[in-house]
Image (cartoon, rainbow, N blue to C red):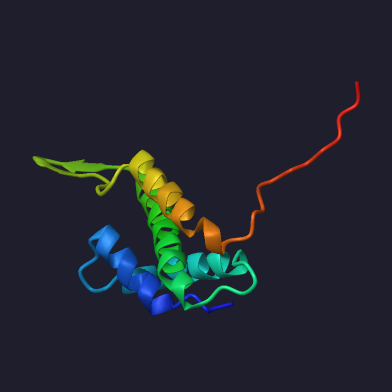
Length: 119
């Protein structure tokens, strides 16, 4: 197993989010996403998994940041309107799902449910 590099996650997140300073204000959300992805990592993953896992963590952090920004309201004063900007939530979710799919070979399957039903 490998450790998901938080600095790599932050750098990838900053690229997605367009954060100028490297996204330092989003360190916590990036660290939480990296830890979540790391907890789902399969046994025996080698260094080849580091890129897809970091990308999955960054896109998860991005999705959560976009959701948080979408929850904010807009403000209008005179001719100036300030509204939550950035990517739309649906696009961020698609990015998250795509990166999760790319990282799937390195993640344990936690979504499968096998249940017996009675007639």
